[in-house]
Image (cartoon, rainbow, N blue to C red; front, side):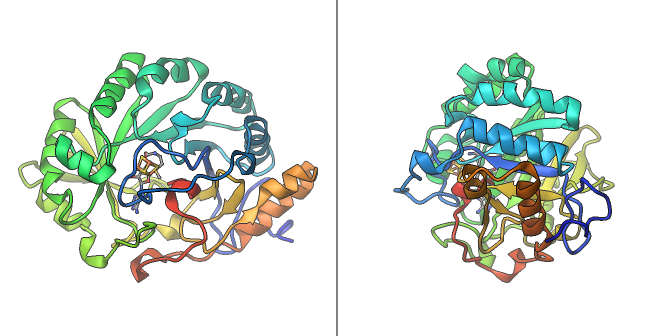
Length: 333
Ligand code: SAM
Ligand code: SF4
């Protein structure tokens, strides 16, 4: 087992010496959008009994924080706001702050923030990433097969609730690369931070091709009407950050053209409780089965340590399409 290999007890470390601080917790595979780069048009949802329930999610989160030194948790999916009991989960995670949890975040498509933003803020959520790949309604529909209106309303609701957020946009050549400047101009006019994400070779439909990836220099070229200043990289943040015209913050996540695997500090848990040390891992290790057969915390922690210890060095994305037994909406982006 990996126990005893860690440089410090209580840390989660892989064989390449990278300590894990961030846990991505997928709450559901379900979604009310069908983004072409993430979800099949007619997805088959996981049976509910296979998905971790709220008590199980709380138990694993507690284990990751108290036994394994995780300091940041991000709730994701699928669409996490579709998960019943989300506010109860956020509330239930609050005692972990006294035990090492520093930040509790969520990535969302924004469509359900109007009814939920204030409740989530009051329950103790720290911040959000809201995905919006185009400002043009027709283009947004083409990419997500949904309407942009609830997302714009959700963004307004997050602002009103005082819930801090960043905007995320996946860029795909010949889909929304013509929208880069318009999206940036719109975001910056409202003093919002925007991050562009390179299209990763994980889409279930296998539409990915290297030609569709719009790289950092190309994105910057579309923003030449701004004065650009690179911000020195801090910690393990995957985004290269820029200050535009001395005041607007822009991030670019270059998973394909310039991977940041060397400093990766993340581990992922799917909606069904499988540990995926990397987005590109071929298969996961089931924590749910061990949890449901009643393994104690020490055994569960050892299982996680071992799965994470064997994490690959990474750099899978530049190679091309990655075949996995799990798709993005199930694993959690
Ligand atoms: N439903 C939420 C949302 O869309 O923000 C959370 C889950 S989604 C899988 C998390 C993030 O993964 C989103 O920002 C989405 O744009 C991104 N994503 C999904 N498939 C991707 C792909 N093939 N390449 C790059 N990013 C992708
Ligand atoms: Fe749903 Fe998010 Fe995937 Fe889009 S990226 S289909 S919103 S889970």
